[in-house]
Image (tube, rainbow, N blue to C red; front, top):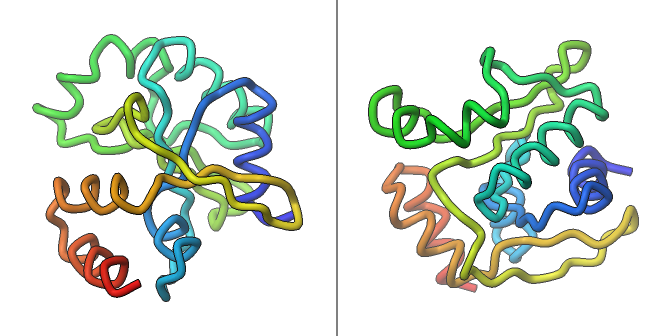
Length: 153
């Protein structure tokens, strides 16, 4: 089972409504895109953050920053506006290729997802239109390239 599949299985087992975004989502929609880390969004709630943190910890992933789900929930606006934090990063200290970014600038609520069946199980990715809108709002050069690739599909 791939790392991506393991992340999705852990979130599903924890009862977290999630969607894969970022490079993996772009690639799973059919565009050529390489990436290592797994980017994910969740329904924005303290419960979803706690469950996500627990699921990642069970996978031996630890927070890169000394913060907890409660901190992220309580200080989200501060982290985004004054510390330029876009994502809460988790990594495996024994395998640095295993990294997850839980995007804190976006909420899955009111967004559409698409189910993808992989050998290791079903995963959820953000629907193409919502993924394009999310990438457009970030404005980063790689996201603008991803938009072009997604629009060509």
